[in-house]
Image (cartoon, rainbow, N blue to C red; front, side, top):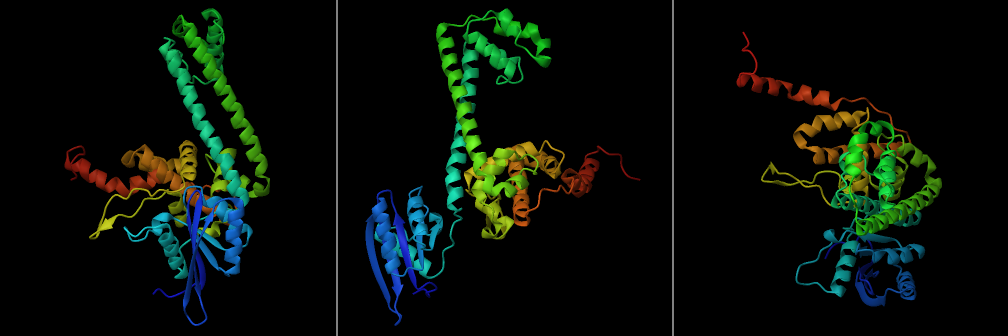
Length: 405
């Protein structure tokens, strides 16, 4: 029997409609009292669960992070001031072939009693609710990108090669031309919508727009354009709500916006996902591991093999990749980091590496409450210094350099 670290624990096996709970209570004489009950997941039943755990004097309740079903249960226990852990299901798997709801709840309680479980990071209630807003906004942004691609596809299907002439088919000039196509305006008027450097391409624009469009193409273009406008307005409304909700975190929000590549929305999303207290992660390495932004370990018989990055917080990973893509174009240490790695690692892996670096910097900024200061490290120069002797030897070996006297 494992040594008891926590005397009175509860293991909760969570499902959509049913909760199975096993409590292990260590008596004064050392005996273990075990009791299992089943509850529904409606509000009144969750409150019954909280009252029963209170009566049992539970010191710690543990549940798996099953989809989103754990959230309402966790909030009920949090309101009742019961210490609750949400743990990764990957780390609490029982022996295969012995899986029932009752045994799962008992196994969770046994591990919790022995102090073998580490809780997952759960942000405060305010940030948990703002996560819903931010993640929905990101989903709408993806839908908007899909609709713009469909618009481009319909134009190509109709023989309109506007996307091959303009640099951005979603730009102001291109939008006006597409609106004119839908309204069946003559090509001469559409060409006059060109602005800036696009005016120099009037002949190409005329040729690309000189195509008869069927009514069905116009009907579909009109519908897609209307949906794009609707999505843009929805995203703007969500941004306004989200930025207003950042008022309690104004200092940290401003600090993050000093980082190259981070705009208002990216800073808000990072705060929502990782919170403001970095002590809960312990170290920048643990934060990167939690977010899935660092390579995994894969070693056997003393040989290190390629380790894929573990699955982490997908929202943080997506935001960091977007930030890394923007930061690599700025005059900062991240540009040098990208240029030093991209030749041998490729674009995608390098973006993950730059995102990892940015996340570690974010940890230090939030922990010390200090804005970003760029150290001016030239990673490309460091790479050249480290590899130049090997490169020179190879060039001399194959005759690309004159022989040394």
